[in-house]
Image 1 (cartoon, helix red, strand yellow):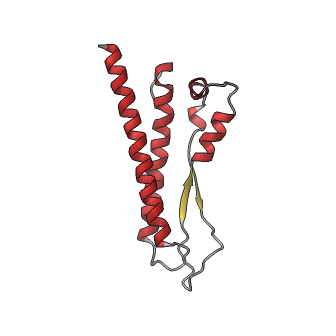
Image 2 (cartoon, rainbow, N blue to C red):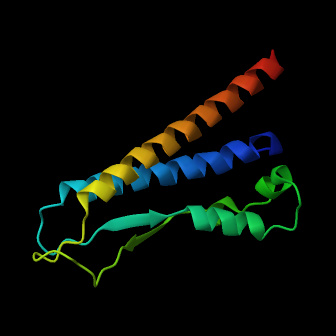
Length: 129
């Protein structure tokens, strides 16, 4: 975590990138366990946590809201998805097609977050010069 208001946005995007990376890992684990009897799909919720953190601020602009987000409370929540549901005989609830789409989506999200962080540091380096 970086200190100073110039890094507020970077810190929030860094948390989002961490959550995205963890979710990507969990999705790959789901894919690897596609044939494991009784396995229940695991997932991570971060988007709603970030939205709630931003809405809980009293500020009207995104820059002010991001600066007031408590980074210690901005962590993803892991959960077992539909633990009591399975449409398969082996009681596994992983749908390989859905997992592959979610993985591709999460990879794009992670790449975008990393590009955003890189661009912010590039801008900061330009200002420092």
